[in-house]
Amino acid sequence: MTELAAAPVIAGPSGRDEVPLIETRNLTKHFKVGGNLSRRRLHAVDNVNLVIHRKEIVALVGESGSGKSTIARLLAQVYRPSGGEIRYLGRPLSVRRSRRDILAYRSDVPMVFQDPFSSLNPAYRVSHGIMRGLKLHRPELNRAQRQAEAERVVTAVGLTPAADILDRYPHELSGGQRQRIGFAQALAYRPTLILADEPVSMLDVSIRIGLLNVMAKLREDENVSFLYITHDLASARYLSDRLLVMYAGHIVESGPTESVLANPKHPYTQLLLSAVPDPRAPLVVDAESDKGEPPRVIDPTEGCRFRWRCPYAVDECHQVTPLLRILGPDHAAACHVAQPD
Ligand code: SF4
Image (cartoon, rainbow, N blue to C red; front, side, top):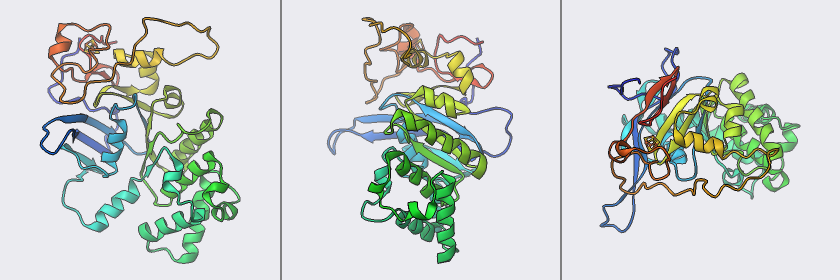
């Protein structure tokens, strides 16, 4: 079995020696729970080390409360980390920066939310949000250039005729069209990385694939990377190059998407995969299936956070928190009993 690495394993690909777009080092976020005098802390994210390179689509999967949306908000600088750091193009974001630096970062790394209505003001036409964003983030453009750019980004996400779409109110668009406008708004900033937080989970299954194809096309045509946050392994498989699996604030498995799904090393990833329903299979009710015990992330004690649900737990799992170990090419898992290839 591979020895524990002296330095933390970074959840990233080998063979890419350029400076990553984003890199986190021991990224941590704890939230206070209880009253003002309380010392209790919810450990939403603990010691996460990950990298995302140019033109990569990385899927971050896990159940609700695993910490994946908190990571997105840390990367978007909506939350301040409790510990660790985020590096963008090799520079720590914690270094004191001007308002202009912060604006530039936010246009490089915008976020698209689960609910497309949250980024569209129902009182204004679609053009309003895009033009306002362009004015703020790309002040060098004049009015005619802003109009041309708004039409370009709306076309880039597959909505035509662009002028007609820009002239509509949000309620005149379908859910899928509104979510495409969310991507168009992000694209108008000329991003390097889009943080997409469950962007298709509120859409009908039949139109999700169209949105996933838009993201794949933007990666090719606009050189954009994505952090695709989802609890849906099927869409992660369809879209992503790499998969990061989160449980209770930790990345518990990482690797090339096909490798992780074909040969999951961590019992939690195995559980997620076994829970994907096959619509053609006969319905079998398994009384012993996982009961979905919520993770204990308020002042967690040492030990594996999955041990309360894990069928393979041994004594060590109750005493020692497992670290990510390399178990195959670019494939790592944080489990005491997981075996290498
Ligand atoms: Fe299960 Fe132990 Fe591995 Fe955690 S470390 S997943 S409890 S076997």
